Image (cartoon, rainbow, N blue to C red):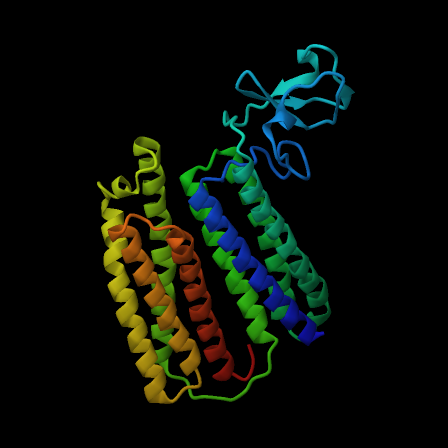
Length: 342
Protein backbone atom coordinates (compact mmCIF):
# COMPACT_ATOMS: atom_id res chain seq x y z
CA UNK A 1 0.00 0.00 0.00
CA UNK A 2 2.95 2.32 0.65
CA UNK A 3 4.10 1.84 -2.94
CA UNK A 4 0.64 2.70 -4.24
CA UNK A 5 0.62 5.94 -2.23
CA UNK A 6 4.13 6.69 -3.52
CA UNK A 7 3.11 6.16 -7.17
CA UNK A 8 -0.16 8.03 -6.75
CA UNK A 9 1.68 11.00 -5.22
CA UNK A 10 4.06 11.08 -8.21
CA UNK A 11 1.15 11.02 -10.65
CA UNK A 12 -0.63 13.74 -8.69
CA UNK A 13 2.52 15.89 -8.63
CA UNK A 14 2.88 15.64 -12.42
CA UNK A 15 -0.77 16.60 -12.84
CA UNK A 16 -0.43 19.55 -10.46
CA UNK A 17 2.52 20.84 -12.50
CA UNK A 18 0.42 20.45 -15.65
CA UNK A 19 -2.29 22.50 -13.94
CA UNK A 20 0.30 25.17 -13.09
CA UNK A 21 1.47 25.16 -16.72
CA UNK A 22 -2.12 25.40 -17.95
CA UNK A 23 -2.73 28.25 -15.51
CA UNK A 24 0.32 30.05 -16.86
CA UNK A 25 -1.01 29.64 -20.41
CA UNK A 26 -4.39 30.95 -19.24
CA UNK A 27 -2.65 34.03 -17.85
CA UNK A 28 -0.46 34.49 -20.94
CA UNK A 29 -3.42 34.32 -23.33
CA UNK A 30 -5.74 36.38 -21.13
CA UNK A 31 -8.19 33.47 -20.85
CA UNK A 32 -8.90 33.78 -17.15
CA UNK A 33 -12.52 34.79 -17.75
CA UNK A 34 -13.03 32.38 -20.65
CA UNK A 35 -15.64 30.72 -18.43
CA UNK A 36 -17.59 33.36 -16.51
CA UNK A 37 -19.10 30.87 -14.04
CA UNK A 38 -17.76 27.96 -11.97
CA UNK A 39 -17.61 24.96 -11.92
CA UNK A 40 -19.55 24.82 -15.20
CA UNK A 41 -18.73 26.99 -18.19
CA UNK A 42 -21.62 29.17 -19.39
CA UNK A 43 -23.78 26.65 -17.55
CA UNK A 44 -22.47 23.70 -19.58
CA UNK A 45 -20.32 20.76 -18.52
CA UNK A 46 -18.77 20.92 -22.02
CA UNK A 47 -18.51 24.58 -23.04
CA UNK A 48 -19.73 26.04 -26.34
CA UNK A 49 -17.45 26.43 -29.33
CA UNK A 50 -19.29 29.23 -31.08
CA UNK A 51 -21.09 32.42 -30.08
CA UNK A 52 -24.37 31.25 -31.63
CA UNK A 53 -24.78 28.75 -28.80
CA UNK A 54 -25.09 31.66 -26.36
CA UNK A 55 -27.70 33.55 -28.36
CA UNK A 56 -31.38 33.34 -27.45
CA UNK A 57 -33.21 30.73 -29.52
CA UNK A 58 -36.94 30.21 -29.93
CA UNK A 59 -38.49 26.83 -29.18
CA UNK A 60 -35.27 25.72 -27.52
CA UNK A 61 -34.93 23.48 -24.48
CA UNK A 62 -32.95 25.39 -21.84
CA UNK A 63 -31.72 23.71 -18.67
CA UNK A 64 -31.48 25.39 -15.29
CA UNK A 65 -28.18 27.28 -14.98
CA UNK A 66 -27.46 27.61 -18.70
CA UNK A 67 -26.28 31.06 -19.76
CA UNK A 68 -27.01 33.25 -22.74
CA UNK A 69 -25.66 36.67 -23.72
CA UNK A 70 -28.29 39.28 -24.54
CA UNK A 71 -27.99 43.07 -24.52
CA UNK A 72 -24.36 42.72 -23.37
CA UNK A 73 -25.55 40.95 -20.22
CA UNK A 74 -25.26 37.37 -19.02
CA UNK A 75 -28.63 35.74 -18.32
CA UNK A 76 -29.03 32.50 -16.38
CA UNK A 77 -31.97 30.15 -16.84
CA UNK A 78 -33.97 29.95 -13.59
CA UNK A 79 -35.36 26.48 -14.33
CA UNK A 80 -35.70 23.96 -17.14
CA UNK A 81 -38.04 25.36 -19.81
CA UNK A 82 -38.74 25.57 -23.54
CA UNK A 83 -38.41 29.11 -24.90
CA UNK A 84 -41.19 30.89 -26.77
CA UNK A 85 -40.93 33.40 -29.60
CA UNK A 86 -39.64 36.14 -27.31
CA UNK A 87 -37.26 36.21 -24.37
CA UNK A 88 -39.40 36.22 -21.23
CA UNK A 89 -37.70 37.77 -18.23
CA UNK A 90 -39.59 35.48 -15.88
CA UNK A 91 -37.42 32.63 -17.17
CA UNK A 92 -34.09 34.36 -16.59
CA UNK A 93 -31.96 35.94 -13.89
CA UNK A 94 -29.26 38.47 -14.66
CA UNK A 95 -25.80 37.12 -13.78
CA UNK A 96 -24.64 39.75 -11.32
CA UNK A 97 -21.49 38.15 -9.86
CA UNK A 98 -19.45 40.22 -12.32
CA UNK A 99 -20.04 42.13 -15.56
CA UNK A 100 -17.72 40.21 -17.90
CA UNK A 101 -19.92 39.29 -20.91
CA UNK A 102 -17.56 38.55 -23.81
CA UNK A 103 -17.23 35.14 -25.49
CA UNK A 104 -13.99 33.99 -27.09
CA UNK A 105 -13.93 30.27 -27.96
CA UNK A 106 -10.15 30.04 -27.64
CA UNK A 107 -10.17 31.66 -24.20
CA UNK A 108 -13.09 29.50 -23.13
CA UNK A 109 -11.41 26.22 -24.06
CA UNK A 110 -8.01 27.21 -22.66
CA UNK A 111 -9.67 27.93 -19.31
CA UNK A 112 -11.81 24.79 -19.58
CA UNK A 113 -8.75 22.56 -20.15
CA UNK A 114 -7.15 24.18 -17.11
CA UNK A 115 -10.19 23.24 -15.04
CA UNK A 116 -10.26 19.69 -16.43
CA UNK A 117 -6.64 19.15 -15.42
CA UNK A 118 -7.43 20.51 -11.96
CA UNK A 119 -10.29 18.06 -11.56
CA UNK A 120 -8.17 15.19 -12.89
CA UNK A 121 -5.41 15.94 -10.37
CA UNK A 122 -7.93 15.39 -7.61
CA UNK A 123 -8.37 11.70 -8.51
CA UNK A 124 -4.95 10.41 -7.33
CA UNK A 125 -5.14 12.75 -4.34
CA UNK A 126 -8.48 11.20 -3.38
CA UNK A 127 -6.89 7.74 -3.73
CA UNK A 128 -3.98 8.81 -1.50
CA UNK A 129 -6.35 10.13 1.16
CA UNK A 130 -8.31 6.87 1.18
CA UNK A 131 -5.20 4.68 1.39
CA UNK A 132 -3.58 6.89 4.03
CA UNK A 133 -6.33 6.06 6.53
CA UNK A 134 -4.82 2.59 6.91
CA UNK A 135 -1.56 4.06 8.21
CA UNK A 136 -2.97 5.85 11.25
CA UNK A 137 -1.44 3.43 13.75
CA UNK A 138 1.86 2.92 11.92
CA UNK A 139 2.66 6.44 10.73
CA UNK A 140 0.22 9.24 11.50
CA UNK A 141 2.12 11.62 9.24
CA UNK A 142 1.05 9.67 6.15
CA UNK A 143 -2.60 9.85 7.22
CA UNK A 144 -2.53 13.50 8.25
CA UNK A 145 -0.71 14.72 5.15
CA UNK A 146 -2.93 12.59 2.89
CA UNK A 147 -6.08 14.12 4.38
CA UNK A 148 -4.65 17.63 4.41
CA UNK A 149 -3.71 17.30 0.72
CA UNK A 150 -7.29 16.31 -0.08
CA UNK A 151 -8.52 19.33 1.86
CA UNK A 152 -5.95 21.47 0.03
CA UNK A 153 -7.11 20.45 -3.44
CA UNK A 154 -10.71 21.12 -2.43
CA UNK A 155 -9.75 24.52 -1.03
CA UNK A 156 -7.83 25.24 -4.23
CA UNK A 157 -10.96 24.52 -6.26
CA UNK A 158 -12.92 26.94 -4.08
CA UNK A 159 -10.19 29.53 -4.55
CA UNK A 160 -10.54 29.06 -8.30
CA UNK A 161 -14.22 29.94 -8.00
CA UNK A 162 -13.45 33.08 -5.97
CA UNK A 163 -10.88 34.14 -8.59
CA UNK A 164 -13.50 33.86 -11.35
CA UNK A 165 -16.24 35.51 -9.27
CA UNK A 166 -13.91 38.43 -8.47
CA UNK A 167 -13.12 38.95 -12.18
CA UNK A 168 -9.47 37.96 -11.55
CA UNK A 169 -8.76 40.04 -8.44
CA UNK A 170 -4.93 40.22 -8.21
CA UNK A 171 -4.59 39.27 -4.53
CA UNK A 172 -6.79 36.21 -5.04
CA UNK A 173 -4.64 35.07 -7.97
CA UNK A 174 -1.59 35.32 -5.67
CA UNK A 175 -3.28 33.25 -2.97
CA UNK A 176 -4.31 30.72 -5.62
CA UNK A 177 -0.66 30.42 -6.73
CA UNK A 178 0.68 30.03 -3.19
CA UNK A 179 -1.88 27.30 -2.47
CA UNK A 180 -0.66 25.40 -5.54
CA UNK A 181 2.85 25.46 -4.05
CA UNK A 182 1.48 24.17 -0.73
CA UNK A 183 -0.06 21.21 -2.58
CA UNK A 184 3.25 20.61 -4.40
CA UNK A 185 5.04 20.53 -1.03
CA UNK A 186 2.50 18.13 0.47
CA UNK A 187 2.81 15.72 -2.45
CA UNK A 188 6.62 15.82 -2.30
CA UNK A 189 6.37 15.10 1.43
CA UNK A 190 4.31 12.00 0.62
CA UNK A 191 6.73 10.90 -2.09
CA UNK A 192 9.73 11.13 0.24
CA UNK A 193 8.09 9.68 3.33
CA UNK A 194 6.90 6.60 1.41
CA UNK A 195 10.17 5.84 -0.39
CA UNK A 196 12.91 3.63 0.98
CA UNK A 197 15.84 5.29 2.72
CA UNK A 198 18.91 4.74 0.53
CA UNK A 199 21.61 5.84 2.98
CA UNK A 200 22.28 7.78 6.16
CA UNK A 201 24.33 10.96 6.37
CA UNK A 202 25.54 13.10 9.22
CA UNK A 203 23.62 16.24 10.03
CA UNK A 204 25.08 19.53 8.90
CA UNK A 205 23.24 22.58 10.24
CA UNK A 206 24.84 24.91 7.71
CA UNK A 207 23.58 22.76 4.84
CA UNK A 208 20.09 22.58 6.35
CA UNK A 209 19.94 26.34 6.92
CA UNK A 210 21.12 26.92 3.35
CA UNK A 211 18.28 24.78 2.02
CA UNK A 212 15.70 26.63 4.11
CA UNK A 213 17.15 30.00 3.12
CA UNK A 214 17.07 29.22 -0.61
CA UNK A 215 13.60 27.71 -0.29
CA UNK A 216 12.32 30.85 1.44
CA UNK A 217 13.94 33.02 -1.22
CA UNK A 218 12.24 31.08 -4.00
CA UNK A 219 8.84 31.38 -2.36
CA UNK A 220 9.34 35.12 -1.83
CA UNK A 221 10.45 35.52 -5.45
CA UNK A 222 7.39 33.70 -6.74
CA UNK A 223 5.12 35.96 -4.69
CA UNK A 224 6.97 39.04 -5.96
CA UNK A 225 6.67 37.64 -9.48
CA UNK A 226 2.89 37.49 -9.18
CA UNK A 227 2.95 41.15 -8.11
CA UNK A 228 5.02 42.04 -11.18
CA UNK A 229 2.56 40.12 -13.33
CA UNK A 230 -0.28 42.14 -11.81
CA UNK A 231 1.57 45.32 -12.80
CA UNK A 232 1.83 43.99 -16.36
CA UNK A 233 -1.88 43.13 -16.43
CA UNK A 234 -2.67 46.69 -15.37
CA UNK A 235 -0.40 48.06 -18.10
CA UNK A 236 -2.04 45.84 -20.71
CA UNK A 237 -5.39 47.43 -19.84
CA UNK A 238 -3.84 50.89 -20.29
CA UNK A 239 -1.63 50.48 -23.38
CA UNK A 240 -3.06 47.35 -25.00
CA UNK A 241 -1.02 44.75 -26.86
CA UNK A 242 2.26 46.68 -26.85
CA UNK A 243 4.82 44.55 -24.94
CA UNK A 244 7.48 47.23 -25.25
CA UNK A 245 5.36 49.47 -22.98
CA UNK A 246 4.41 46.90 -20.34
CA UNK A 247 7.46 47.61 -18.21
CA UNK A 248 8.04 51.19 -19.29
CA UNK A 249 7.22 52.42 -15.76
CA UNK A 250 8.03 49.54 -13.39
CA UNK A 251 7.41 49.79 -9.67
CA UNK A 252 9.95 49.14 -6.94
CA UNK A 253 8.60 45.59 -6.65
CA UNK A 254 9.95 44.83 -10.12
CA UNK A 255 13.43 46.08 -9.21
CA UNK A 256 13.43 44.07 -5.98
CA UNK A 257 12.34 40.97 -7.90
CA UNK A 258 15.04 41.47 -10.52
CA UNK A 259 17.81 42.24 -8.02
CA UNK A 260 16.93 39.32 -5.77
CA UNK A 261 17.56 36.91 -8.64
CA UNK A 262 21.28 37.53 -8.05
CA UNK A 263 20.93 36.50 -4.40
CA UNK A 264 18.93 33.42 -5.44
CA UNK A 265 21.67 32.38 -7.86
CA UNK A 266 24.56 32.98 -5.47
CA UNK A 267 22.92 31.25 -2.49
CA UNK A 268 22.12 28.17 -4.55
CA UNK A 269 25.68 28.04 -5.90
CA UNK A 270 26.87 28.02 -2.29
CA UNK A 271 24.39 25.21 -1.57
CA UNK A 272 25.73 23.26 -4.53
CA UNK A 273 29.34 23.57 -3.38
CA UNK A 274 28.44 22.78 0.23
CA UNK A 275 26.78 19.57 -0.92
CA UNK A 276 29.83 18.71 -3.00
CA UNK A 277 32.33 19.42 -0.22
CA UNK A 278 30.35 17.30 2.24
CA UNK A 279 30.00 14.55 -0.38
CA UNK A 280 26.26 14.36 0.24
CA UNK A 281 24.27 12.26 -2.26
CA UNK A 282 22.33 15.23 -3.61
CA UNK A 283 24.57 16.25 -6.51
CA UNK A 284 21.96 15.67 -9.21
CA UNK A 285 19.24 17.55 -7.31
CA UNK A 286 21.46 20.58 -6.62
CA UNK A 287 22.60 20.49 -10.24
CA UNK A 288 19.02 20.63 -11.50
CA UNK A 289 18.31 23.47 -9.11
CA UNK A 290 21.01 25.52 -10.81
CA UNK A 291 19.64 24.57 -14.23
CA UNK A 292 16.18 25.85 -13.24
CA UNK A 293 17.68 29.11 -11.97
CA UNK A 294 19.58 29.49 -15.24
CA UNK A 295 16.35 29.12 -17.22
CA UNK A 296 14.67 31.60 -14.87
CA UNK A 297 17.39 34.19 -15.44
CA UNK A 298 17.37 33.72 -19.21
CA UNK A 299 13.57 33.96 -19.57
CA UNK A 300 13.51 36.96 -17.24
CA UNK A 301 16.07 38.76 -19.39
CA UNK A 302 14.21 37.83 -22.59
CA UNK A 303 10.98 39.25 -21.23
CA UNK A 304 12.58 42.52 -20.16
CA UNK A 305 14.97 43.16 -23.04
CA UNK A 306 13.10 41.52 -25.94
CA UNK A 307 9.54 42.55 -25.04
CA UNK A 308 8.07 39.27 -23.79
CA UNK A 309 8.73 36.72 -26.54
CA UNK A 310 5.98 34.12 -26.88
CA UNK A 311 6.00 31.36 -24.20
CA UNK A 312 8.61 33.08 -22.00
CA UNK A 313 6.01 34.01 -19.39
CA UNK A 314 4.64 30.47 -18.76
CA UNK A 315 8.15 28.99 -18.89
CA UNK A 316 9.34 31.54 -16.33
CA UNK A 317 6.49 30.72 -13.96
CA UNK A 318 6.62 26.94 -14.34
CA UNK A 319 10.40 26.82 -13.88
CA UNK A 320 10.02 28.84 -10.68
CA UNK A 321 7.54 26.31 -9.29
CA UNK A 322 9.76 23.40 -10.33
CA UNK A 323 12.69 25.13 -8.60
CA UNK A 324 10.59 25.39 -5.43
CA UNK A 325 9.68 21.71 -5.73
CA UNK A 326 13.30 20.63 -6.18
CA UNK A 327 14.41 22.64 -3.17
CA UNK A 328 11.64 21.21 -1.01
CA UNK A 329 12.49 17.71 -2.24
CA UNK A 330 16.12 18.33 -1.28
CA UNK A 331 15.06 19.44 2.19
CA UNK A 332 12.81 16.41 2.70
CA UNK A 333 15.37 13.87 1.48
CA UNK A 334 18.05 15.49 3.65
CA UNK A 335 15.76 15.23 6.69
CA UNK A 336 14.89 11.62 5.89
CA UNK A 337 18.53 10.59 5.56
CA UNK A 338 19.61 12.33 8.77
CA UNK A 339 16.82 10.86 10.91
CA UNK A 340 15.67 7.36 11.74
CA UNK A 341 12.18 8.24 10.64
CA UNK A 342 10.08 11.19 9.53
